Image 1 (cartoon, rainbow, N blue to C red):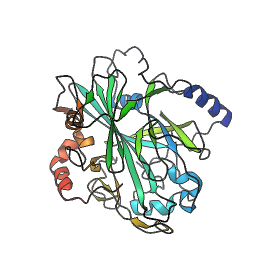
Image 2 (cartoon, rainbow, N blue to C red):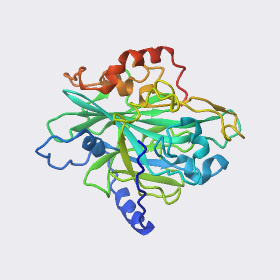
Image 3 (spheres, helix red, strand yellow):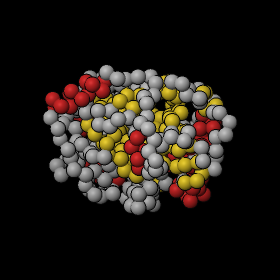
Image 4 (spheres, one colour):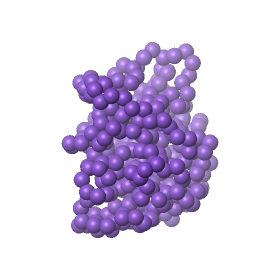
Length: 357
């Protein structure tokens, strides 16, 4: 996890041209997938193909914004260590990198792939002094359910996003999945990328608190960043850069987030990032809370049936609850590294404090 990705910078003119071309092709239907390859694609290739084009609203006002840098997505070890309790202070400091990264995990059944994406920010912040809190670290994201239809990459049927302590569900136009116990909240749009040949789903996060929904339920208001999935990590040129490539990191990598889940410097509990009140967190605002951000196996919507963390660890169960699906959706996993910690995850769901993020 501590390998440093090089920051790749390109001219603002080129960025503007590519972003303008991409914006013209927003569509409410999925774009065509290239002809399947003869060999099965890897999980990394699958994650890259379905990774979202991501709109990040940016607020550059207030001392905690750091000129907009507090809204940049990055790695949990952007500052060169796995200490979650110094991330607030080190955001924007010299010697740290806010190069764009996102995390993913893939689990599989015989009928579907489920890909979870985590977007991490070192700060969940506010510039409002009344009745609003902020906290160190912020982790929110999205689950995509992809039917294994015989093509190389399958077909995306549904998405569930994480906005603080609430989940929101979406389907692409023409999906065979419809509302279940939870009502579908909107249509998942697709956009072509200037960096590959695929149409990608489009997600967006608000500034400051970073709740995540399908675009355009959140959108850029003024300054903002448009992140494109890639194999390289770029640092935004400023808070209004509309073409920034982000690199994916496998949660299940040998020394990845899942392997670090018992690291008490990074996690305060199973699925909860460690964060304290040091630095100026809470200064000029209502308060600063501790241990308030979550990894995917800690995400929870307290008003639904699936338990804490099951969006990532048992997405087939969540899909069956959230959506009405065609017959035959498999519930047994052929690949699910989360499953080995099922008992610990269940205990954490029973004893962990309510999700705050």
